[in-house]
Length: 425
Ligand SMILES: *Cc1c(COP(=O)(O)O)cnc(C)c1O
Image 1 (tube, rainbow, N blue to C red):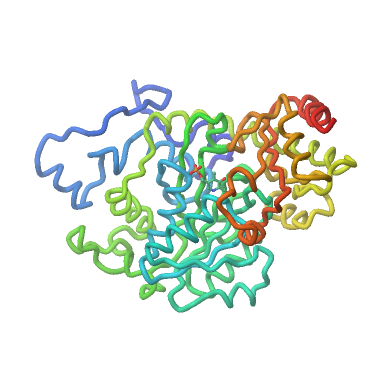
Image 2: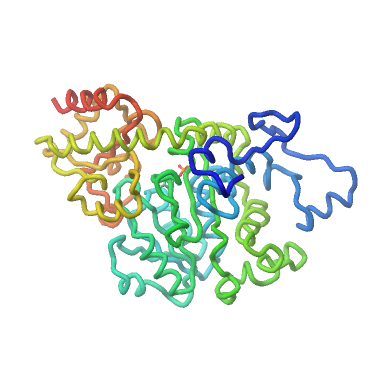
């Protein structure tokens, strides 16, 4: 069914396809293990000669149904749920990079991803070069080295709200023989499908809009199946040469377009864990069933709030790509014609103490680290999510010290604006 239906239908119906007498609603397969009749049946699974379930750390039917829904929404060939967005981004890179390798990353990214890439992956011997999201192709090309294996960026950056020129990044990545990996968390496949613009792999923190109700931390990796690993076989030996841990099986030869996802599941998930619990996958699926209804409301509300902030004399600046005159307005019109997301970055005139007082005065919008769910939230990244970063790293990540991140929910917009108004005093 996946190919012929539009996103709204996929949100509701894709993934779980019950047959006669099976539950209509996706069941939670709350089982770590699965039964077989013969030793031979089980052995074939361990050799990747048959597909089937044997242990929930590798695969679980509830997770797979939800992953299939997200793959359909993004237009990919396969997907894997992970325990968090952090795990998704780590696996997406680590599946094709090993010690001694390098990748290129847009500098305007989520603070947690910045730490993962710049600090933790460096300890594993994998180096990253950050490039400005707005850099031209020549500057982007200059960041590549012979050992570069991937390029990474966020469709809409958290929290700085920069919009990535996906086609430009894809062109540069492909000129250099590497895939483009896009974290599509803020846009969701309702507002942007990066594969349509040349991206090869998409990741999400499903914790955000996909779940949409702040109930379950999770992540997902989706593969377009479009990147030709064999054409750059020397760069990707993990996919194109025999894996000793599976009796010398070669992923590209055995699985074709499924090579990348199979390796991520059979090797990384087997060895590193980080599976999403089936309970959380069930909650994620409930969220996905209304994603197409919630995203337009987030966007309508955020547009109205951004326009109100822009016209308010106490506000120093507003960054929301739906505002005419915004630096990213044209890119947003191209990549996000139906709307971007509910997240707005802005700064207040006055001191940092006044900004903190404003946040403390809010009644409807509450201070939480979370973004991108049904409720309106506010956060000061420099003193919360990004407090590990130095001032220079903050600037590199596009996070001004006075930046307030407002995640506009799906409440009545007049109530949201009235709350902001009273908090400004
Ligand atoms: C939140 C977030 C992450 C990390 O996801 P978790 O689910 O919190 O691990 C990664 N990328 C983006 C853009 C995010 O907003």
